[in-house]
Image (cartoon, rainbow, N blue to C red; front, side, top):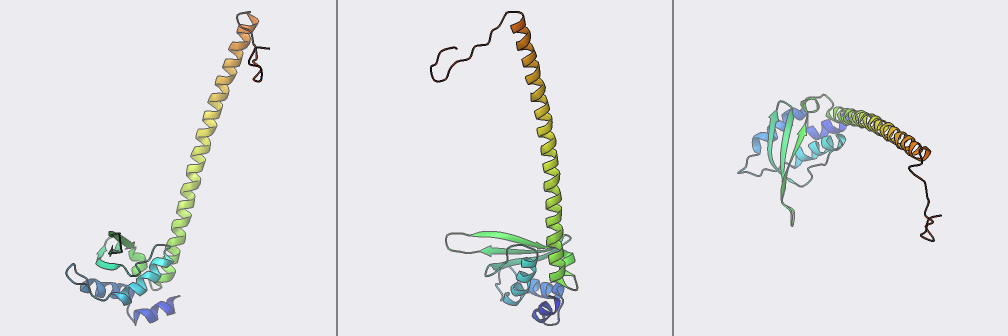
Length: 166
């Protein structure tokens, strides 16, 4: 992975390419960001995210949580902005594609763990609900048996086909 990306970077680090492109991108100018987007798209893809593709790069900012790439979509019938965030650990990695893949897998593991924890909580909630309803049913059955034993209630069943008690 690394060698292929290094060819695209032309001997620069991903941080250097990002900073270089960020200096060119301003709200008033639309420089050619094709080389940058081609490299960043491979990183975004390895992260399991959407890619920039042919969207217009509006801004590139380096913030404490990573590099923020703001893009603008001028497609027919739609116009929206989106921000891609690439963690600094990926931007500064010796092998950004490897680090991006690792980030994606770590995120998937974390999401799976969170899903399993939600499932455990749901099972516990359902178990408590089941036990509560089971106890209510037992109390109702006991009360009904007591009423029948005291002669204060009788059980009749309606025949659904005939509509009269049997």
